[in-house]
Image (cartoon, rainbow, N blue to C red):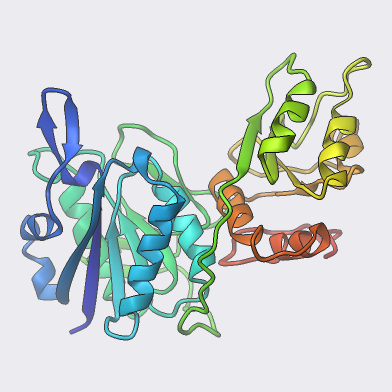
Length: 336
């Protein structure tokens, strides 16, 4: 019987109702007691890291989660992290970069309703998370939700209330859980082991969502405060090219200052391709990095992770475009 460590961080799954709305209050042990079947699957020990609505989780909390896993990595066969759904995809993505190529599973789960409510997805999700973490096919960082195990670099929350809250974007789920059985979609990759961890993060990253009529001066205002800019362009990666408002000039100023600029798309599915239209091709010539089919959560956290490690823009570009946990599928013409 495998030995799993449950790390609790709060979230909806652990909430109780108050006069001011739901607040995370249930402890890791209280969560575990609601699903006694877990004890039949594996040996479980628990640790309460913090008790937060995931809206309040930030990079320092990501480091605490990663350190807790590293401190106990040799003792346990896997890890289950209970977490709020709103920022779960960010946490799953950043753990994929901080703790890469882990042979032992690091599984995040949560719920759309508190585990103590009569109508809840919490009990099923928690049971499924332990079923997957205890299986022989489990590896790396995943989100387990509504019967699916999804790569941490590919999972995204698409629904605010439905139990089918998460989907795997641009990549199949790695396993399905049905009737207490785990059905792997892919074999366990080769070359996995204990992660060589890099826990430093630079949170000075700004995401700019373009809207019709936006003026390029906003880039000039942001430049002193941030080390990297992620631009959510239109469609396959279009950026306005007004006759009297030069986005390319302002983007070029970021790059000349040694700062990272990454282009992604506001569209969830199928990714960017800045070579298709003039409005994308023109801006790419400035030296921006294209994110292709990466999720926004992966783009943000990979950028935070790489900034402290890369001495210059060339090194950053090479590392960013190097796939980690299948986070990016590069077109054939892209060269590193």
